[in-house]
Image (tube, rainbow, N blue to C red; front, side):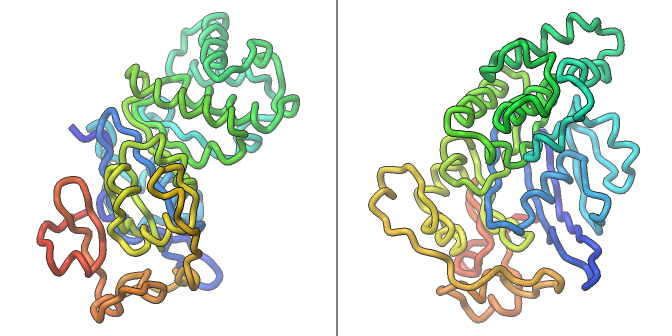
Length: 329
């Protein structure tokens, strides 16, 4: 049974220049036991999708259409108050900005107790501190962190503390929005190992991991969805995507970054020509067409469907003309 599903999600930000179409017909299914990576250039809609999935949309975001279910519950995306009961236990957000995520006037132990008390009102402070200390230890943090204020910790320590707090209630779905960007290599490894263990031990049913780091996702994720201009343009098992990307944007993205794969170590890095499109206007055709070296005539005027066989899907007319298995998301 699918743990979480988003279908045909359209959302925009209201700006002085008009509607900025951050998400355009996005669909994504997340199965139990999976770590799903989402990758793409800055501004492609990754973090916006994370905010919707975690039920923490920014006030300026307006959801135009789409449906969402989590753990068998159909979520009313327009009813913000109804999201409160699902946050923390059913779905939780692991944010990137660790300092902004922590109350500077509260000690870490007090914050942890408040988080656990939401789901377990009768929990004793000693028990909440013990559980938090155990989770901190998994991230190589000493118990004394419980008595510290956020400003007394380094940036890497704060990010690991936020990771511990976000997973304290063992949510069914954990949405991690670029949590590794502020971490050094050793701290990043601890985070990756913890997230894997949470899923393997059944403490978290599934994880959506947002990142611009393809190399990290190639080690962590079971599946990867590639986003461009507010759309999912390719979705595939990690090995398939890294070894044989189908969409021209996925190929260009992988060619522009270092990935620790034997077959790719000898490749010369190349940039992606041009710039992402202006999302203040709806895009009729393929959003990557102006930068694509393999564009066809339909690419300029008609949006390609997300098609493929089995679990490998791509939104490209190169494949849509020969494959008939359309994804209706």
